[in-house]
Every structure is written in structure tokens, then in C-alpha cells.
Image (cartoon, rainbow, N blue to C red; front, side):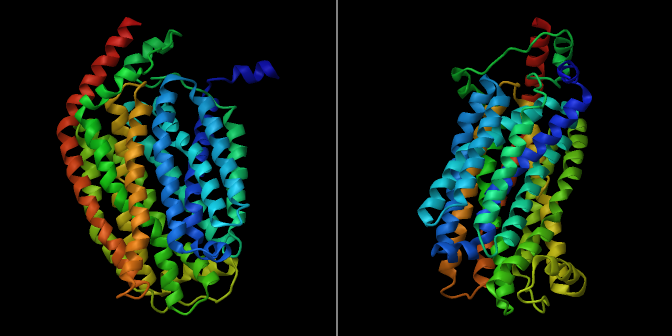
Length: 471
């Protein structure tokens, strides 16, 4: 049996199994982040705290995840990535399990921060691993699946929290912890691709059985930003993620819209969660956006940056409409179970013009912004050497986290301040709308990346070809 299993190592089925396990594992970390924001109402009641205080926890988790991701990324570029991913997953799963036992606000904060320490490994080390599996001509498409898995993870986490956590916030936290441990163990059975595995310039090197043994050194880090494309990719993430970070509160916006219609908090939590889940369907367009990015990049090396700029700027008007649409006339059963509410909410998409319009505008907004992540991820791989990708992504993830935590942390206080003159949910709609302005400088920075990326890509290809010949 042992010999048979050893014979499967590195085969196509083993690689497919690796990608499946890895994609699910990557989605679970986003599910863990999405749980607390999706059950603000029951958590605040159980711990006798405010929605603003819980928003601080989410912002702190995002920020600490980003801060630790730089160290995880650098460590992953120097050492065994499989081991790092396993232990990182165990850490965040333990933090989530312990969060489920919190009986006071400070306990929830503490254990959520422990969870964040492990989450940083999944994003950065995982990015380095997945980039080695895919050739440059299919990177956009592959990164769209990787990014989509994280979006689906966030959707799953929000759904799990809004339904299973509507009466007890502890259950979703422990469910996601158990799933994390299960897939961490399964990850130990996966294939570890060599660095630069899918690079055309290194194909003969790997075919000969030789190893690409280059590793990052600390003195190489400053030089990574001599590539101007890296600078623009990192900086755009800060402003774009301020806007993305505010969107975490969309679910709370729609829960308030349901409350406005006279439903109790448990029903509002469930219905708002179900609506938010349906409204995220537009993210599925990231697959098409990644494919289009690959096609545009094949014609011109500025293609990925161009489609990202168009997507971010084009989404703004659709987000604004989505925020301000009323939710009038919604008709669901107050106090019903999730099973009973699902068909009722889906029926509202057909019978209620306001729900239908919200679905359409959210789908268009997310379809456009879905061009951003897969093409940005692919571009990082295109302009950086294999041993540098985790570190650069970690730095981008740090800046992204700073932006995302800023947007997340400020949305609640701004909405609360607006409540002095605007009643809920209008204060939340106005607060969310204000943050859309941050997509504009991000679009401009992608325009700058359009100018620099062709030269950086060609220089990176030349370096890989030289190393392939030297080995």
C-alpha cells in the first residue's frame, strides 16, 4: 500500500487533489474572517457590547492578518511552504474554537487575534504555492478560481454565521474551526510543487530532475521595489481596500433594511444574511474576468492592469445605486427557520422589484470589481521571480489589510455619526457610499502600472531564461 501511494506522488490525480484541498483550505480562512460581522446583532446581545466594538474586532483581525502575512511570506520564500501552511491553519482554527467559548468581549477579542496570527500564512504562502502550479498564459484564470474560492469562503462564513449564529454566536466559530483542522490534515497528503514549476524558461531544468534552488535573502527585499509595477500594485491596494473593507458592512445594511420593515432581530439577521449571499453572485464573474485578462495580456503586456482599472472605476455607480435602493414590500415569515426563509427570499427576487433591482446592481458592481484580484495576483507573478512572489504578495497583503481594516473600522463610526441626522438604514447607505471614492485613485495607479508592467515582465522573463540555462 505504501509503495502504491508513493507511486501516486506528483501524478496528475495527485496534483488535482492538491489543488482541490488547497482551494478549500484557502476559502476557509476567509470564512473565518466573515463570521463575526455576519452576526453582529446576536453577538452584541450575548456579550452586552456594541456593534462598533465588534467592528473593531473585525478590523483588528484584518490588520493583524496583514501584518503577520509579510513575515509568513518571507519565511515561505525561504523554507518549507507545506509545513508553514499546516501550522498556520492549526493556529487560526484554534483561535476560532476558543472564540466560540468567549463569555466576555475581551475574550472574543483575544482569541480572534490568535486566529489572525495563523490566517496570515494562508494568504501569502498560499499565493506562492498556487503561482508555481500555473503557467503565465493561464495565470489570470487560475488566480480567479483561487480568489473566487476565498470569496465563496467569505460567503459560506457569512451564511453559516447569519443562520446558525442568529441565536447563538458560538456555534459558527466552532464549526469553522473543526473544518479548518480537517483540511489542514488533508493538506499533508498533497503534492508540493517545486518553485518555478510552471515557468516555461525552467521547463528543461525541472524535466532533468534538477532543482531551482534560489531563495530570497533579506538584502534583496529593497530591490523588489525597483520594479515600478510592484510599487503601483502595492499602493493601489491601500485605497481600493478601503472601499472593499467598507463593503463588509453591506450585510448589516440589509439587516437594518429588514428591521425597518418591522421584523424582529433574529429574522432580520437571517434574511439580511440570505440577501447578502444572493447579492454576491456577481463575484462569479471573476472567472470570466481572469480569462479576459489572460487574453488581453497575450495581446499586450499591459492587459491585466488595463482590465483592472476599467473594472474598479466602472463599478462605482452600480454600488451607489445598490446602497440607496429601498427594500420596500418585502414579505417573509417573521420568526421562521432558515429552511422556510430560503424559498421566501428567493421568491422576493422575482416578485419584489426592489429586491430584483438590488440583485441586478450588486451583480453588475461585483462583476466589474471581480476583474481586480485575479489580474493583480497574476501580475505579481508575472513581474517577480518565484522566490520573491510570497514576499511581494505579503507586502501587498499588508497594505491591503491596512486599507481594508481602515475601511471596515471607519464605516461603523461614520454611520453612527450620521445617525444623528439620518435614521437607519439611510445612515449606513450614506456611510458606505462615501467610501466608494477610494476606488478612483486605485484606478489611476492601475493606469500607471499599464506603463511599467511590459518592461518589468520582459526583464523577469530574461532573468528566468538565464537561470534556466545556467542550471
